[in-house]
Length: 283
Ligand SMILES: C[S@@+](CC[C@H](N)C(=O)[O-])C[C@H]1O[C@@H](n2cnc3c(N)ncnc32)[C@H](O)[C@@H]1O
Image 1 (cartoon, rainbow, N blue to C red):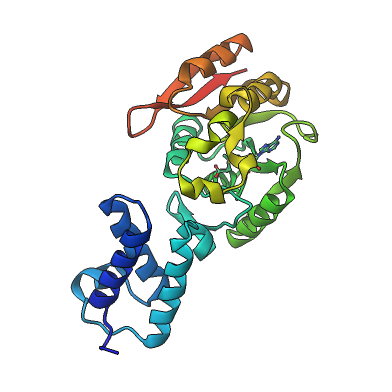
Image 2 (cartoon, rainbow, N blue to C red):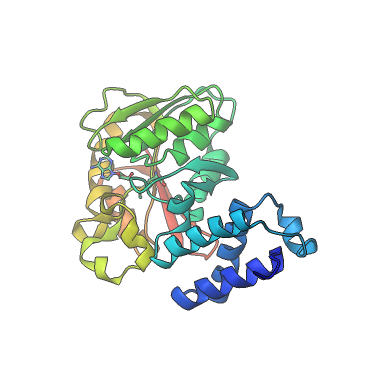
């Protein structure tokens, strides 16, 4: 075999992914870089200025195993068993949604809304891997944080993440509010399922690896959001906030749902693509 170095391996990964995945070049390059960073003892800088650095056969075989899995469509997050959210790495597996950069908007809005020194009581509803609640726990050091999900398997990963960041967090298995006994939350935050169940066939192949329960909702994707909005006020303090992520084409429906449930000072927020993706309202 010819001597392997970063440059040859980088080309190899890119070509293999290009042949089997229908992704834009920018994403192929990003995935190539992530595979290199995950598999080799290198930094991002090495990948630019140290391309002649040799790669062992053992590392080459490890990379090949990753590529073989990726070729089946399995997302890198599930192959690595971890993914980044708000600058930190969290455990994920097939029972949890892969954290999305879009969801970081919820964190930014929380930071703009609540001073970090406040002793808040926060509920992350449908917590999945726990990225939202645990990220808030990492910044609101005087707060009490509760994570809840209907999936026991997702809660197991959330527990592992809470331990990783050394956070004392209460985990509750609950079908939305059914088993939530705590009240008086300052903030209830959720990234609930909001893809229209009838449009499952339209989604990208990667989404087929993610739990259906994390993605799809009845009533044109609005069913879970309606349930949450209808019940959340019972669990908020006066002037407490319900904050939800939703689809870019759902903003006006969500506004109506918040209004119908008599939330006050309703606000909607745009993501970096200038789409309204988060709605909040005060009790
Ligand atoms: C879109 S995922 C969000 C996961 C995580 N919060 C994130 O942003 O990466 C929605 C989550 O809601 C949970 N879920 C779905 N239906 C639920 C229900 N009826 N009660 C509680 N949680 C539910 C799913 O298990 C999933 O973890």
